[in-house]
Amino acid sequence: MTHKMAVSVFALSGNEVARVEIEADRSVHDLHCKIEEITAIPTWKQKLAHGLHILDPGSTLEELDLHPCCEVNLGINAQVIAVTASNDATAKLWNSMEGDCLQTFEGHSGRVYSVSLSPDGTLVLTSSHDETAKLWSAEDGACLLTLRGHTGAVHFAAFSYDGAFVITLADDGAGKVWNVRCGECIHTFHGNAGAVVNSIAFSPVGESVLTAAADGTARLWSISGKTCLETLSMAHDDSVNSAVFSADGSLALTSSCDCTAKMWRLHDGTCMQNFSGHKDRLYSAFFSPDCSMVLTSCVDGTFKLWICASGICTHTFGEPGFELMSAVFSPDGTSVLAYTEDGVPMLWRPAERLCPQTTEWRAMKLDGSSAVDSNLGGHVGDINSAVFSADGMFVLTASHDRTTKLWHVITGMCVKTCAGHSGAVNMAQFLPERSTQLVQTDGKRRPSKESVAVSKEAAKFS
Image 1 (tube, one colour):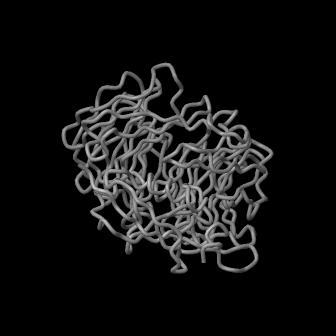
Image 2: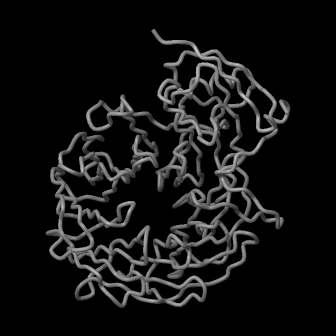
């Protein structure tokens, strides 16, 4: 028989704001709900910490091994910083928690396809149909550099993990690496005999770049591009659509039009595992954060979970015939986010969190069906991108309906709709996990999304 716990909840000011009696087998989210009943602070704005550890809403109090009479600290998600890219030729910086536009980046002469923030949160990177990428100041919206050299629309751009370099990918079939300090193109990547480069990625450790090409190969390069460190030759029997690194940079995962994905050891180019079972070409493949599982997405509307060590498929999700656009792991690997062109993102979770490989997985639609406010309902246009926040608590979706929506993962509620673009929103991204600050437009320092501040809702208890 489970025992009851007495939980004292303290604001960051040190004042006690609630006392809650709750069964030990209940989840942290249930504790959030009881705190909301007492304080009127919405569950999606709460962050609970015990000591130095943030409490995972999906865990039970029993699993966290808390004392029957314990104290927790209540913080408030005051803001969740995000950036968006739109067909209206602009990008925008938002506090998506409140739906406030903090900055607009104007200067492209064509649709903006991608957007991201530098690791330190001070720069914004955009890529556009106008064949350029641009670097902007997050503080005042000024364009600092324009990266010219592609001869086709630039549909992707990203920062390296240290923020010193940028990669771009364009419709001219080439990938490029650029120096952020001076805007110089360091190297241009092509496949064999000028084959189209389909994907490009920076290593999470060290200075290397991974490319995937239509010639059926993937290659590991030095960041200068002058040295090919490893060629995954004869990687696939058809075009390689994606290539990604493992978290420690030692492995690569490729997906192909030959209906398979493969796992590679990079230091010698050995194929370690083949993931075969899809009936059509693959969009993408991703490692789980701990590299124990692989997630593959197929154009037939299905995605599969695989065990890395054995190559065994444990679960198949989705429905053949649907236009599946993407499927990705949550930051802790316990959930999968997938979306189709019909405008409804889906969250899949294992019934037993500690046994994701063997348990049944359940789906939840992020459609805003329970929303009283129509502004917090689902999208009314195609979904163009969907991403998790670094803490896994929120999902950000970008849509053809010109809006971006922030969703609370545990409840499936739409927290806020960000409206302000006059064209389809092609991409939305959160502030990177490692950012410690973001420069506010008034010259003050704006805390990152990881900062927990006492908001107006909590101030009354101080």
